[in-house]
Image (cartoon, rainbow, N blue to C red; front, side, top):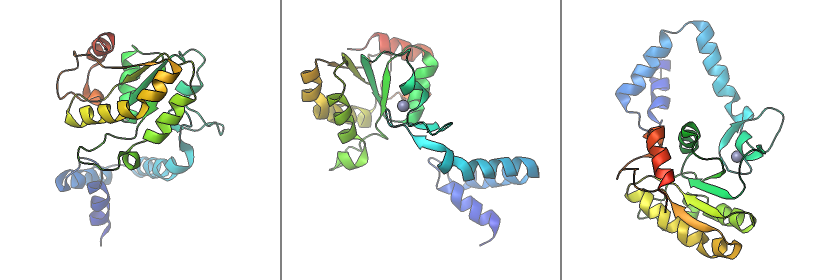
Length: 202
Ligand SMILES: [Zn+2]
């Protein structure tokens, strides 16, 4: 296989990328100078070594001095009383951009597909349950997932998974309010809408 073809095949495996787009990426790379290409390849080579899953929220973060937790989880300025459960790392970024939330996060690692029989294998439900059990200071757990059928399904599964432990520690479970229109994906929602959805949580 020639290199153009090989690279195209790699890009095709990226989420949401079709064969035409994959090919455009390769031609884009071919137009870059050697220095840029070296920067890109060393960034890719270092990604496994320098990026780690946070021991607190499970999102990816850049390791600086062998720390186990990300900057949000290790911050002293954030509330320990609120936990927001999101599907993906990109949702944390959208929330942080809106600057409307100052609690802790938990990243599920995806949404649960509607016909999935073993949601525990698909997302971090067991880890979440353990975290809630071990967080007596929590007063509110916000399940913040996309307003589409998969999101609704995930919301129900998460709620069922942690309802008893949340009650035990005295934390209420809430979800994002309307404002987030039906079908909306958090990743593509603007900060103002996120703020409203958070304000109107129930
Ligand atoms: Zn973290």
